[in-house]
Image 1 (cartoon, rainbow, N blue to C red):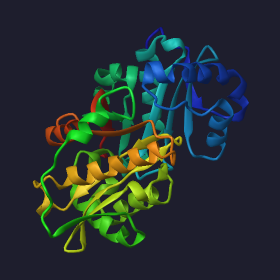
Image 2: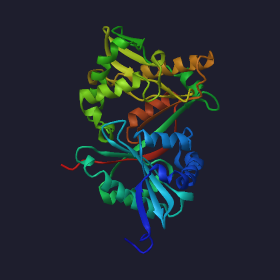
Image 3: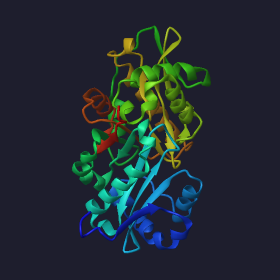
Image 4: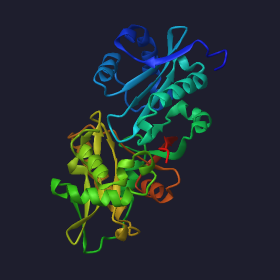
Length: 331
């Protein structure tokens, strides 16, 4: 411990600390878009403290001479990983020093859970400056690209409209999602993601049971509003072999959480057909006033050049990149 942080103390947020902590949290809310690339406004303070009280999240607060100056939010309630959501320092001051103190305390608090759970941490915005420091604790990194298809203000629509795809063979057919495809989706997605980078920071993809949990949460509106009419299924001789899921956040931002196709059907441009149909449906919904959709977004690894090429070909544009960090369990 250095002389500068000898007055530091970190402890979990309780109701006794709400009044003093509110200033630091609201400073984060004011900077969420500019400093952390948040697409939506974070929970207001009351909503945040309600989530803490319901044990949906934990908030580790750093005090300097008893004054709250920074915090770290994490949760184990969503997946089989410990999800580190955000690290913020008041007015962005002494970010590295304060963040590293919080990380150390966080790792101490979660030591028992980390025996069989990884830690995943999307380092959005200014948090990417912590890469070198948290790497000392064994964190590893995957580059993630965020891509957007804007309904207005760009030429995304024109690119999609003029994109000509090869005709599907007669054995293939595109249909909308139906609940009867659920178990097929679990198998196709698990096969496609089992050895992917996503499985490094969401180990549910490594098992059928875990993947079933992911698909269940998508179609049951846990992550966002599921859009079955814009979720496309690829059939081969009437058997599902590919899926392009679509959901909606805050009523206007469409998101593609998963695109997957059976290995024996890869390399034929089938994912592009699914994606094009799904996006065209979203455009139809927006134009007809069914949903006020302003954009479609998705993510992929920065070194997944095939996926990046597919998205660009259909009018998506790269917005920004960020490091997705994860701390593996110890063998």
